[in-house]
Length: 78
Image (cartoon, rainbow, N blue to C red; front, side, top):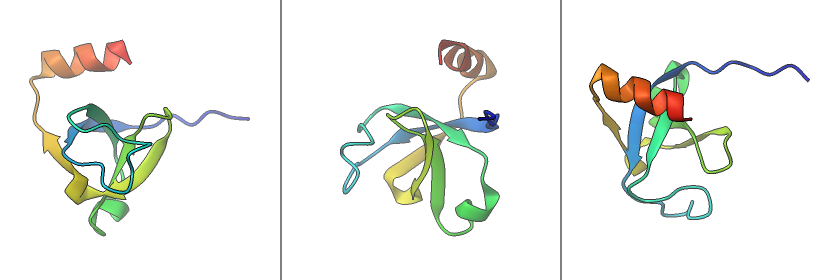
């Protein structure tokens, strides 16, 4: 099976996990995967607790603007 390379485009913090408690942790940072079509439908694609990317309602998250140095460190840690 060929592995696909996801293009992450920043981070978001989970504000609430209503309906997704098994997949999301409140106050945790999640890598956001670029998905313009889903964003137009008020959805956000993140890499969740399973290590896979899934769509969630964007209202559950707050996108963050982090300094480049912190973004690099978070990407290296994952």
